[in-house]
Image (tube, rainbow, N blue to C red; front, top):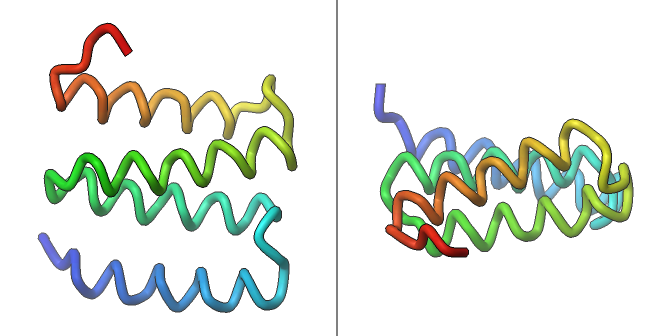
Length: 90
């Protein structure tokens, strides 16, 4: 119900823990970047959302590979952000 700040705080805590415990190239870290991107996208903060999705994509490509479903989902979300911005050709 629009509790974006609360959600963001929880994701930031999770990200901090994951970065320390798992490292910056772990797929769980990518998932949290993806979730942060989702919160930002729902708030209409498309540039910031895209940055988070790009982080997730970079990690997913390294950790899971280009054919993994999580990688595909991240590409989908990047496409959604670009569509919302009217950047249809990107």
